[in-house]
Amino acid sequence: MATNKVQTGIRFEPELLYKIAQVAKANKRSLNAQLEYLAQTCVDEYEQSNGKIPVDEEALYKK
Image (cartoon, rainbow, N blue to C red):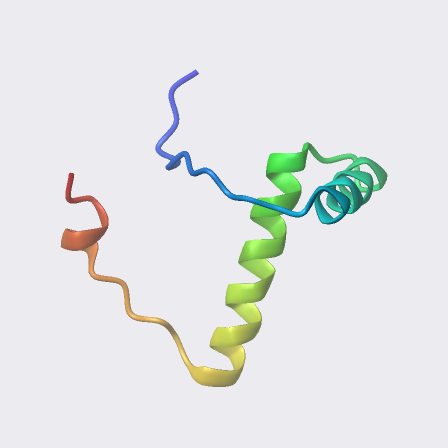
């Protein structure tokens, strides 16, 4: 399955990761989908308060 998503390694305290996994299960999401949802919600709230974050498309896809 091809995807354009970037793979990252994020470190969590075990208890926090467990709790996020339980929230994901309650929401019928995978852990990854829950983390993406939480990150997007955070960015949306930030942009609502502070304006759109500009994205440099050239730097974004630079390898």
